Amino acid sequence: MRAVAGLRRTVAQMSEPGQKYFKLRVYVAGKEHHLVVWDGVRDYENQPAIEGLAATGQFGAKVGKLGIVQIRNGRIGRRVFKTLFPTFDNAVLWTRNHAVYSAIVNSLREQSDFSFEGLTS
Image (cartoon, rainbow, N blue to C red; front, top):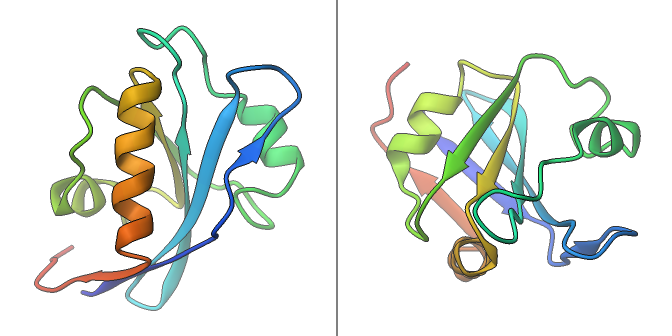
């Protein structure tokens, strides 16, 4: 299995302060999955606005089976992707705070197209 993510280059600011998210697509075995990195602001106090994200099409045409994972630190590796996909259709990485959010988004931007070889389902 091979996963490739294509990133959108913008970080969207929703109407309320602190509701930032970053969206990307992950392809596993030819299937597109949508992944949203959500800014938890401080100790997960800012919960993901799932209904708002779904209503604006951030998970594609259909939300499907959605996984929500809390992320404590700024490192994200292949284990997270291997666990999420193909188990879920789409996922939200809910970061602990703004510093973790920024670290993950910056890391993903640096790898604007990345692949993980050797993933097995």
